[in-house]
Each structure stands twice: as structure tokens, then as C-alpha cells.
Image (cartoon, rainbow, N blue to C red):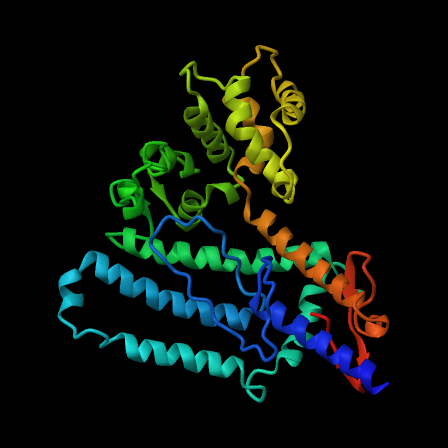
Length: 366
């Protein structure tokens, strides 16, 4: 009995550590005594990897404050290098590093930040539709989506403070300047494609008043998350502009097959990279999808005909939230199958999981 209890305790501890500090990524090697880490991934560079928000709002808030300080420092270095050079090397970095380590010490102090208690507190907030003592994939997806929306809006508000030169609460196109990575990118991704040009700005301007409020500015920075018909149509137009190699204003099958179809397939089949299907085996489903999209039968895809798949070409935050939810559910199932009695804590692999009594205390699988 003691051996079984030890196995259950280890399984719970491992899952708790994973939920607080992990995203849907595979980490083959885990140290036995793992310290909870704060992420430090902020950069002014063109982001090529989607970084999910921390599962726990407290951890997310700590990381957000850390990122704000990094952002302020890098912004100062970009806009006022003369002020930065006046300081001795490392003058500002030491206190910042100490604060960072103090935050990690807080997260790893069981008396100050009890992980189990935090998970028990969070469970009813996630288990909301319906509140039945089990967390489903949809509930986890909504939770991740809510946390991500807060993070995205926070970053947009931070950006808006920089570009709102006259401090009227709006951003005009004249006030906005493209990020340095857009101007300096050798591949001209973004700038030549129109991501930071006036057409993009106007598509984000829902009421066409020439100014972007915070909601419109947030859509401007994150068009794939917008539900604005104008902005979605603009995304389609930009895809045609990028893929249209023969400059006829539409996308033919070859242009669709060598580019867009891979993006759609990547969305539908997350694990397709594990296999390498032949060109011929992919062409048939590509032609089938192309014919479904080609409503007027002219063997070309217009901007309007790309609308049904634009959400797969440019995945929204919900796509990544679902990935996180799926991964957490899958890890729960892995643990539930690791030992016969783990079901005392993790209730099966039916797409949801809950918590039950363990060792006289109430423990949560979240």
C-alpha cells in the first residue's frame, strides 16, 4: 500500500509541475528535483514561435511584470541609446536579476506558494460549463483562451502608449511606425506584404474614422484573432498578393498547392511532420479542397474564396489554446495508465478529468 501511495504522490507532483510551468512541448528529460522556472523570452525580433501564457494567473502576472521591464529596457535602448550608454555596464541588470530570482524563490517556497492549494482554487474557475466536478477539453480551452486574451490585450495597451503620440487614446496611421524587425528583415516579410502599411491600418479601422481605439489597435496587431469582416478580407487579399506568382490577381492550383495547402494541412494534421507523404499522395486531397473552394469553377481562387480557410492559414489564439488543452488531457491519460491505482486521482481517459480524495486531503489533477 505504501508503494502504491508513493507512486500516486509522484504522479501528482509531476503533473502539478508540468501544469504550472509547461506548454504543449515535449521535454524528454526531467530532473528529479525540478525547480519551477519563470520564462524570459521577450524580444523585439520577429516572433517565429508562439509562446503560451502560464496556466496559473499568478505566474502569468509575475512573467508579465518581468516582460514589461525587459520591454522598457529594450525600448529605451532603441529610442534613446545615449541614455543607456551613460550607465556603467551591468548597473541596471543586477537589481533586475535579483528581482527575477526572488520571484522564482517565491514560486518555489511551499509556504508562500503552495502549488496544490493553487490548483484546488483554480479548479472550480475552470470547471464552469457545467460545474460538474470534471474539467473537459472545452473548459480547458476556454481557460487558456481567457488567460491569453488578457496577455494579448496587455501587450497591445503597452504598444499603444508608445504610438499614441498626442495621448488622446487613439492611434493614427501617421503616429504608427513599423517595428524595426519589419524594416530590417532581409526577406521583407511583413513590410512588402503590407502587414504594416496603410491598407492594413484601414482594414483594422472598424468605424472608418481614421483612428484606432484600443480594440481596433489590438485587431491591427493580431489580425488572426479578429472577427472583423474587413480585416479577415484583408488577410485573404494579402495571401493572394503573396502567393500570386503570375500576377493575375488570383491563386491557381500550383500556387495553392505549393504553400497554402501545406498550411491548411498543418492545421488539420498536427502530427503530419512525423511522416513524409509523397508529392502524388498529397496532390489528390489538395485538388479536392481546391475544387471545394473554387465556387465559380474558374480554376482560380479569389480573395473571397479563401475566406473559408483563412482561419487555418492564420490560426487564432483559440487554436493554440486547444493545443494546450489537448496536451494536458493527454498527459493526464498517460499518468492514469502508468499505474493501476492512479485512477484514484485521475478519472480515466474519456476527455475529461476531475479530483478525488487522496491521503485524507482533497487533491486536484489540475
